[in-house]
Image 1 (spheres, one colour):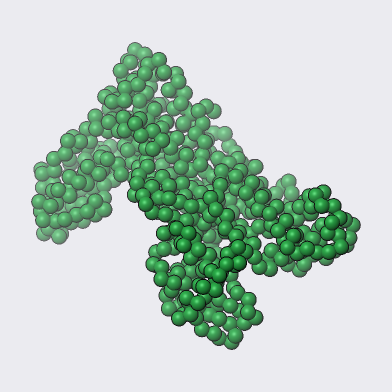
Image 2 (cartoon, helix red, strand yellow):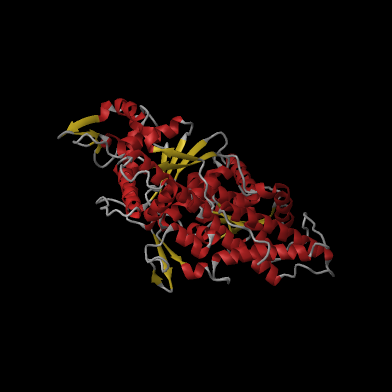
Length: 540
């Protein structure tokens, strides 16, 4: 938390204790003021608790104004119906710079998650063809959430669940065999639910080049399924890496099914299981679901739900205390049924957290884009990254809250000017780096005693807020809070170095203070960009 805000909260808690009211830090809201005439920080604590004390908010505010003593505070004003406005001593704000210098890349970190383990599963695309742009949103979002959680102390495992069992993989293997045989000159008919994409044709050609006519006279189902799936998984890994996403664990559904986990789970759920018209149901309505869910169909085939329950318990048994699933917009119904199943197995209601992201629409020249000009097919994950680059793909995705549908403007993402939010952020870092190089002979004074101008104070307060923003973003699993912070930081730095002369060799002490502020801003901006997986450029 911002150390100044923390100090203010503790001081307010002490004053309220004198009035026989016990408050916690979370009970007190302190915000950075938007207008400098209202000081640096403001609180509505008097409006919230005056009635409890039988006082008017203004009376309570006046009492606090007279009784709160804190070294960092220059003055306290009472505004409006009872708001408290705090003006902080400039030297206290400047002292933040030495903290940033000593912390470096660790500035913004915390230990709130220390000793706690989280498994975050995301993407988990079927290994049956190219990933699409929705997978790109899930990849960037899941990876950034994992980074944020690690930054506040959690031990995090990033996991990809491979759906390598069932009819879709059978159809994949059969589709590859048909394309293989076509390359050998045989007329073939693909399965009705087969895979017709150019990726299967290319894999078949690779297979011919590798094994020749070895399988011309017989279909080896296990071989063709495995060969096709491994090739598709390799491409998935390569595409993910192009976006800077690397998983810790790839968990196979086929391997899970080969264990006794599914049977064990079914036995332990027997108290909640019943049969109806030959099908086996789980009474998830007993734990808040809107309807009961089928586990085994009347033909004896399992639905995906039963092995998925076993998979979630598998993640917990491997040492994770908390699970996060990042899913697409059509998975809202999934949440209640899986939570219900896990509660039936004895886990807490909060053991699973599901992040449901909304749709992505690609836009170019003001029009929705659905097809790739290069291939004439739907735009894939790979197409997007190749079109705009890793940094732009990640930044634009993360800049929009996952709760909201997003329009990804391809033209804007490639624009080399400040209207592009990524360019604006990276240019700010490059500009700060240039100032440091140009003023290297002047040096820096990390005590920064000469920072008093409004632009300098605004920038210092924004730098002070970074640890709390990181903590909020991690707790809410909302990376857009970091991109919002970055945009504001770029704006504050721009205002600072545009309106105040940073390098002035005739005023060396002032320049040393301002260069220290430049360095602190550069460190924090780089830290924020790193949390998003974005390159902090030294020059542009």
